[in-house]
Length: 220
Image 1 (spheres, rainbow, N blue to C red):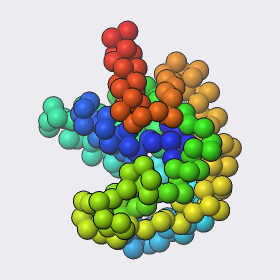
Image 2: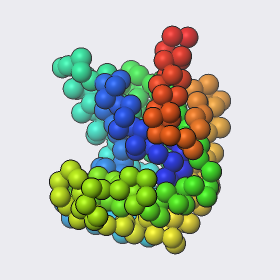
Image 3: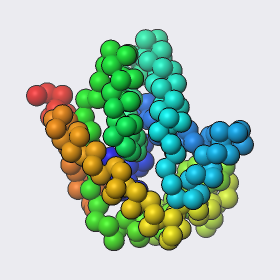
């Protein structure tokens, strides 16, 4: 967990493979639907571009399907040990729905990592972010630029500034986080599974601190 721009996606990409966890990021699922220009994808695109959150019922349904796929793969291979949620849940309703989905599968959340970053740093990070319109890879004009300006290193696609990374949308997204998602920290703190990590550090340091916290919980 953490506000937009805190580094959730970056850390999920690093930690997931090390722990054999499949990343579950609603943003990735939404972008796939948008790219397909399905009816759902068009609805999701309109909602995201307006700076709002996709309704819980749509998000929960998408996540439930993905978790069923991961559970099936886990039964077939020891290369899959579970799921790593990136930016989900965002509301208490989603959190309770996730609890129910996992309980139905006979499992539960082991830990919730909060990546904490000062607000001014978040705005700088978000406004400089560029996304590949083809494969969805994310770069930053200052901290993580592509080798060729405007071109994705991975697939050669064009890098764009998404509508939700522009100033007006950033302000709305951060306000939504404060109002709807930040209260979830108390929800998970009461469950005793919340761990807070300082996200205003070197990327490698943040990764190391998250892994250390998870290892400590696993050995407790």
